[in-house]
Length: 272
Image (cartoon, rainbow, N blue to C red; front, top):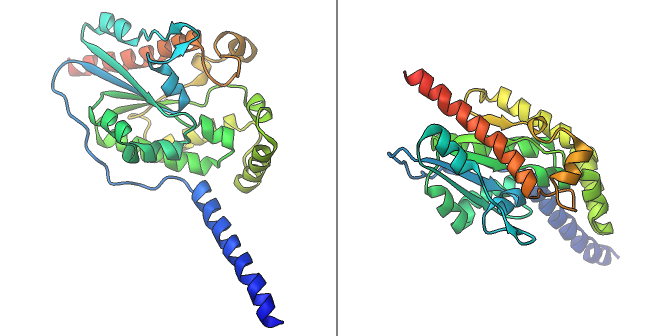
């Protein structure tokens, strides 16, 4: 009888341990990696990277909305204002959380090669999938800290996108039943609300203050461009209410331009 119980118990224990390890790996935030060095340029070209999740992927000129390619105005406007060459390049991978974005910087060869080219500024779209998957705010904070530390170590100024006002309820309702069950499990485990966008915005502010990044990191506040929920969903998002359309990118890019110009002008004033 004891032997039979053991035969039944051992596989159950193995399954429990396996599930436990998978859950731990899934919910644990990013861990630091040895930082590699990006190229340091000595010309007057201003180089701007746009990285992260599907928002960065769709920002590329290779992505099309219907039949119209995305037309990024950042290089032309900054060039006209600062009278120096400007390069903007985008690299995004659909569906990545903040942890997976950080790991992709090291593990995805094409992403690493993209970053190794070297930039002055880096816009980071990360955390939308964290809120979508109901990860914890500590998961987001630690993973974002790893990204920030990597950029600052390479003298790249981070421009962090605050969680935008996308339709998080619609995103949940579109999911299959099994995914909804997982989301509720994540909410229970992580103490995350259904509409957790503000929780993550607050967590980002806590990270910036706790680590003393106030003078080294810029946050692109959602209220500076995405402050009219119902109207914005109709005018700046595609039908899924999660991703931006061409107008949405144009509005977001205008804020990025303003932040970069303010920083560059402040540097010029300091140097004089």
